[in-house]
Length: 123
Length: 123
DNA sequence: ATTATAAACAGTAATGATTACTATTTATAG
DNA sequence: CTATAAATAGTAATCATTACTGTTTATAAT
Image 1 (cartoon, rainbow over the protein chains, first blue to last red):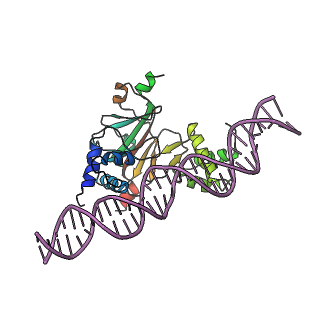
Image 2: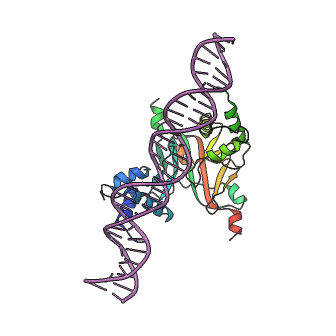
């Protein structure tokens, strides 16, 4: 893989994002670094970065794909009310039932659903 | 909500499916019961059944939405090689870190990734 | 340094899963 | 039996994502 300013910028934006932006949100942010970057380039580089394992995809409540640049062990809490995704830093466990079936887990993606503290207080 | 033959058929198909079909797969199966059912009707009823909590959505590896009619406690193992989803029946645990932050979990969706036994043996 | 080459790019067109729309049918209550 | 609003079939529209094309650029060999 050849180096490219565009891919570096996409990765930099994701590394510095505390939320879980979609491709077009990332596109808007990268445009502040490279104003004439193309949306297709953002998509292509997101795909490459994902394949390299440098970023991950977060399951969300809408139809768009959300990306994440924080590789630190954590899980996600998705608020049913405001749809905000909260990172909860902890090392998730793997149920023994998987190993019992001979299934070796390489990675995992967990989303917990509920109402976040902010929304609960606003009722 | 009024009763409808179409919704009953969609739910029946999902209840009797052991896999995790997409909307158009469900459409094909329901057509064997109601040949002239419309794809839009399938989508609308899947949405209603989901809102009622009678079915759930499974995160998968492709861009399509996969549905599930089995509400028994279980987790999913997604094979990175064949993309097959395996149901593993067990009661998943909730990390204490969530409660520590005051976040009350109402439901969860967990996917574990790895290579399934069949694919591992085929190498 | 210059050149060759293939990867990456910007810009645009195409795809396809899903949603919206509309005239008609149908479940249900009065 | 009738009124009415929800549900439907069929079709059109949406829009996130992917594919395409001619041009640019990183990198390695001359």
